Length: 497
View (cartoon, helix red, strand yellow):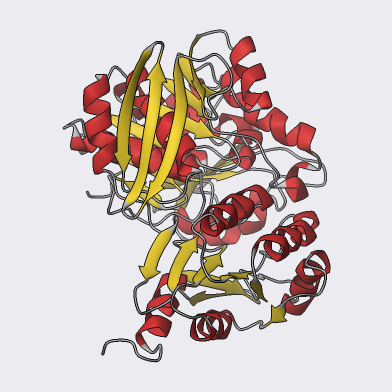
């Protein structure tokens, strides 16, 4: 796929802002961007309020050739002085309107796509991956967009955020539509909903996985966190919804949703159109039994982890809600590989078994460790940390979960960002009751755990999953858990050379 602008051309500024009932000069711009580093020559810079106002980056935008600047009025922010050849105007509540402006600039791309938005604490990435992969298997061109990247799986383009800013979101949708994609499965984070990143989007279907603890550093409490998730179903008016009703929050969502709902009972408890009745782990993946009314059917999946039964059930629900025949949905889901960094398996046999997983919340870590304990290893090892500048309140809880379920625990760095890695590790250790090894060098921690483990043991490396970097002290350094695991297993005593 190739990058593109508004059909490779430009748009009239006054027409764009008419979409949000704002006045703008009659002139043509060749692009639009909320971030100064994405401004193109003769483009529009959208300076929104936020943690730092966009006008702080005005010099960079002008240097890159911005021809027009729209800014959001805010307390303490003065009207900028602009060069004579640069148009400028203020737009109240600009951040909330960027999606509508971008939608107009890129020719309303979501109007020609069936967009499914997926929200929830855990499971978004796997559900989006499964649904997009399955649709492609059935000959219906589909893309996923989220934590792993964006595009038709398995090869995705990298993405800095789970849900991109609205200017970038609509640009990507234009790229996908122009390249023949018909379905897009978009992960929608709580921050994205709070920050109006999906404004201007036409949503065919919305899905909810479950609600646990995450992002309380941003939202403040679980009520605000849940309220952000609810906005997808209330304010953005999807035509229909697929909801896990065995989650109490999901059950309430389904009861109050104004459109058509396909209820999925991911624990097989509550009445639902689709119920997960049984999940059995096997050497090569999962065996599921699902029910639609009185009719039961089976899915053989290549995914590991019984908790993935819920993700497979929700993905099946999405396919059925989108009109896919049940037998076709079963065939397609059985063909899907696991997403990168989600219960990704290495080793075994004469080597310890190793799993790399993105689990970075207490619920997710507990689910993964519980699944691995059920495999009855000789010993279960866990290598984990917590990200800096993220919900510090969950660190001790993560330590408690890991300490309770793993036989051996290595606490290490995740993405410490600007925080002190040792302080983060000690907060985790406080929850683990002091029973752990502290090794802040993540590579050394992974190698130490794997080399200390024995065949028949399982080592979980948790927290970063698919990520190919580590953020520390303002630097983004190349780093891959999977690569370190492969190297450590290759140098394991007795490993085949």
